[in-house]
Image 1 (cartoon, protein in one colour):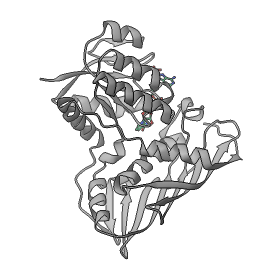
Image 2 (image 1 turned 90 degrees about the vertical axis):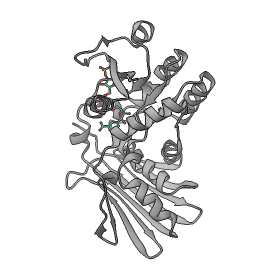
Image 3 (image 1 turned 135 degrees about the horizontal axis):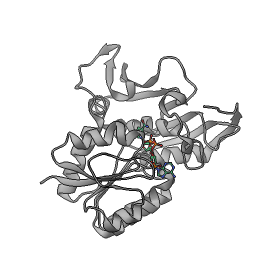
Image 4 (image 1 turned 180 degrees about the vertical axis):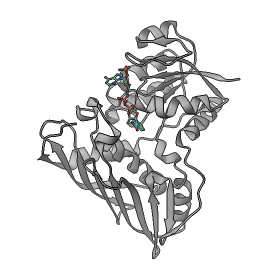
Length: 306
Ligand code: NAP
């Protein structure tokens, strides 16, 4: 039987990915949309979240709103006994997602805190490749043009908006998936535009498994070739994940992978979780972000204008 799911926050990711992924998955159908400005044809639309919860169709909720407004919406969804899928980052703080997770557990509600990049085709093979080798060094380069990918999104520059960590946390979600075990942030530099609350660039020096150096460079001012790469040196070989995990090469030789299908995979996984009444909520990427903000040195840089 197809599960009715309601998408909340009809913005870029809802339109680009969630609505097509739901339409393409026979386990789900779109029951309603909730958004103050956006609407979706063919289903009931609600501008008020509380009214949707009280009067709207039953079934799970997919929260595609910014992280700073997740806590209240997530707790209300759980209190209504509805299963819950949330976009990354799962919340604005670790404290918030811990509260959401505990509430879901207590209510017997399924919580899926998604990390879409973990469903990129190179991630599972990279994890398997790494598991058989001794990792020596990891280098993350996540450089993109914020004007191209986040036009008009004021929330990313406000407190709780993550700044360049909004895409950077995708790299951290892959890192924590392919390199299980403790990872600590030793030092970080956060470059914050004078007119913004969140960084436009960041450099992180981390250590995995006690001794493995992991360097990450995130930059939103990058206008050239857009780069989402992770390079892993292990047992004398070099694994490269390119295009956010859509590509993989070993010592420069490309590895054949299936086509990218992150959001279809997310909804397939959600269907499995709902059927099994299990949750999937890992906060490791958010913890690394939080730690970078805790130990990071803030540097003021030129104001940002769209
Ligand atoms: P977006 O285009 O700004 O859409 C977010 C939607 O949430 C808005 O359209 C807005 O719809 C609603 N919303 C509710 N409360 C809001 C508030 N206080 N401030 C701003 N919007 C509010 O953002 P997005 O790019 O879709 O990102 C949403 C989430 O998806 C983020 O957590 C982001 O990290 C994640 N994500 C984005 C991408 C991407 O490529 N953009 C990729 C993967 C994941 P109404 O105004 O109509 O209520």
